[in-house]
Image (tube, rainbow, N blue to C red; front, side, top):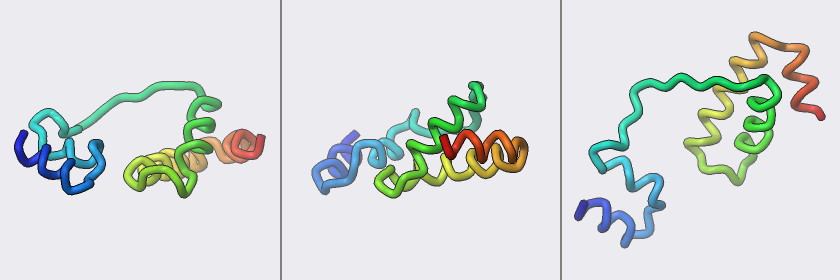
Length: 79
């Protein structure tokens, strides 16, 4: 907890500082949703002003969706 508080005091964003807390580790997750919902997420989270780690995950999701649903994905991202 002290390291976390020090990181916050040093100006590190809370979402980044949480990595030193015991329960902040992700190992696996299952996420479901419609193709339209994933497209909305990608349009929102792939923007340059999004936190880098979030943007990287969104980009990977977008690449997977494009590979699996190329025509629909292109149409959804353009609407």
